[in-house]
Length: 442
Ligand code: IMO
Ligand code: MG
Image (cartoon, rainbow, N blue to C red; front, side, top):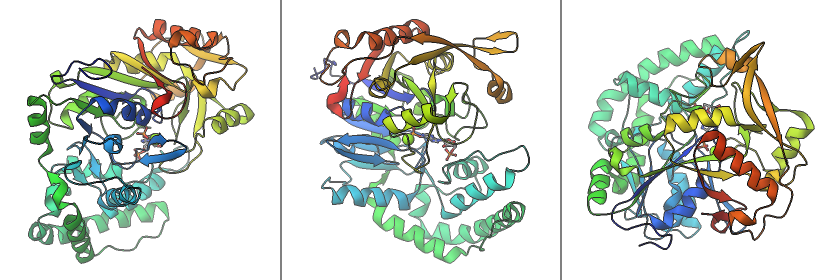
């Protein structure tokens, strides 16, 4: 039995974001990781930015699973991810400088994970800029090459996987052709976007792959086998979802979304584990909202009111530093994402920020002209046009510091959480009242 009462014998738990990302998934994963033997990232890549607070210091993870700060936890970068080896090596170096051991006992990288190549990052920007014209704005991707990497995964012939970078003969035979195709595509996109573009050469890429392989080879392995074996021998597995359900490639605000499946469905395809390993599915939701990049955001607020929230919550992108857009909690969207992810429990964050505001609203429905809408429309133009219908709630007025039980929260906070539960139909199991592990009530 663990100190939080979880029965030993394999238990799984899947953490996923329920809004537009940046809900505080890193804090929940870091809090829970002590009860798990393995933490596995199953989707996305360095477009994620998961923050863990250690005292007053913030550790930001992009590719590295957030369990790396816990002794005795194996961290796995699963086959469903898009790995930028240069970024990963940077994160490994930084952690080692901070005194954390990053050895193959603590980190494994799937040999089936796809590699974000340098040209994917160029393609990401050129495509976004080339498409934007007239009424079509940019998606505002993180420029981390994620969309083009997953597109190549679907194309197959143009993809490179982690197992390939360990195979110089294979790369030397394929990369010249691949680079020649990429030069054609990138040249055309550069022409359309009016941006400069320097033709790529294949030899330096082969060399870069070899350098990555020499550093990462000890970590690259068949992680599906590793995970299944760990599960069968009774290890507890925590699935760390990146991004969020409103950014999900199927159920998000498509096309203003990311390119991976962020839900627990992605956790299975992205690790090689089966549904019985998922266990509790915890959806993380912020009690106000933020969004980075373009796309519909019905409850968005602007001006001084948004600035107050942004400053109180330090709402600037962990990956890109961009100021995040700010909005009130949208319960219609939260109900939708809770449904399509099948979450069995909620973790809520952001109370500290709300405690600095003198008003509090939640969206409980949409209107479009005379029409009342209570689901998230698939058509993003419709979603962009809806007007939120708000319920005014009592502000979160009172101290949160030192609160260790839900019953001791200020009345406004308790009422807000009750309202979330009754609207969404899922219990709130974890509450974040301040930063770090000690700020989680679970
Ligand atoms: P975490 O895991 C916030 C957004 C980008 C952009 C869109 C597509 O930290 O919650 P991409 O580079 O993925 O092609 O960009 O998705 N986006 C995120 N926003 N948090 C994230 O991850 C995000 N991952 C992608 O801002 O609008
Ligand atoms: Mg983030």
